[in-house]
Amino acid sequence: MPRFSITALLWLFALVAAGMTTFGPVLGAICSAVVLIQAVNLKNKKVHLGWKVLAMLSPLWVGPFFTGVFDRNLQVDHRTCEQRVGTIVNAMLSYADDHGALPPPVVRNADGDALHSWRVLLLPYLGEQELYDAYDFSQPWDSPHNLALAERIPDVYRCPGNEALDHLPTTYLGAPGMLASNYFVVVGPHTAFPEGDGRPLSELTDGLAATALVVETADRNRCWLDPDYLTVSEAVRLLTTPTEFRHLHVREHSWSTTFETWGGEVGFADGHTADVRAEPNGVYARAILTADQDDDRRVRYRRGWDMNHRERLIRWDRVLGFCLFATVSLLPELKSTEKQSADGTE
Image (cartoon, rainbow, N blue to C red; front, side, top):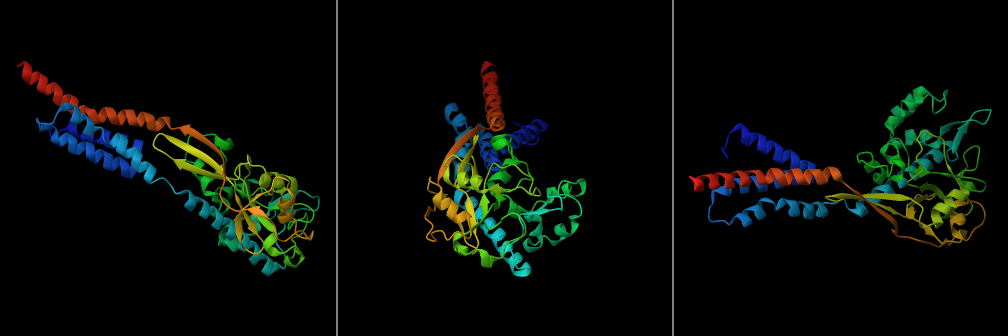
C-alpha cells in the first residue's frame, strides 16, 4: 500500500474511527496503531499468512481485556454516592444552624399546594447561590421559569450510576431523566420531616446517629425540583426488600453494558452515612426513620454492598464497530495477497 496515497489515508481514517467506536478513544488509538504496524510489515514474505492475520486481529481480543482492566471501579462509584449523601446531610445541618430547624420537606401555600422542594432551600449551602437566586419562589416549581432551571441540577443530587444512563441507548429503570434526583427525605409522623415546618434537631430525641435524614433510591424518576418525598411505608419497603432498586452501578464492557443494583446510602442526622439493609420485619427500618419514639438506639442493620439485581444490555453499536474494525484491519492483507497472486500468475 503506498505510504502517502489517498487510499492509504482513507484506510487509516476508517481504521481509527472503527477502533475508537469499538474500544473507546485511548484503546481505539492503541489498537489502530498495532494494526498499522502490522500493515507496514506486510512485505516480510517469511511470515506465514496465518500469523500475519493473527497479528492483524490481535487488538480484537487485546482490546476487550484492557477494557475490563480499565472498567470503572465499583468502590469509586459507590464512594462518590456516599460522599454526595454526606454533602446533602451536612447542608441540612448547616441550614438547621442558621434557621433553628431542618428545612421543611415541602413548601406549601395557604391552600396546601406543594410549591417547592427542600432541595431548592439547600442550594446556598451546596455552593449554588446563583442558582438559588435565579429560582422564583413566587411561582410553583413546575412553572415555565423554574422548570427552565431544572437542567442546572447540581451533581450532588444525582447518583453516578444514574448519570451514566444519560449516555446509553437504554430504557433501563424507565430511562431516568437527566433532571431526576436519587436522594429523598422521608415524610410522616414522628420522622425527622413531618408535614409542616422544619423540625429542630433538639426534637430528634432518638439520637442523631440513629435518625435517618436522606434515603437513596434508583428508580423514582422525579425532577429534582419536584417536592416529592418518600412515605414511611415506602421507605421501609425500600430498606427491607432485596429486590428494591436503591443504588445503580453501570459497568461498561467491550460488547455489553451491565446494570447492577445494590443497597443504597442513608444519611443520618449526625452527618455519617451507611449502606443500610435492615432486617425483613421492618422494626429496625422504622427505628432509623422515626426520630422521637424512644426506639432502641442500638439499631441493628447490615452494612456493606449487596448486589440484588443484574441485567445486561448488548451494545450492538460496538458489535458493528467490531465487525467494521475487523474488515478494515484485513484490507491491507487482502490487497497484499491479491498482489502476490497476480505476480505469481504473471
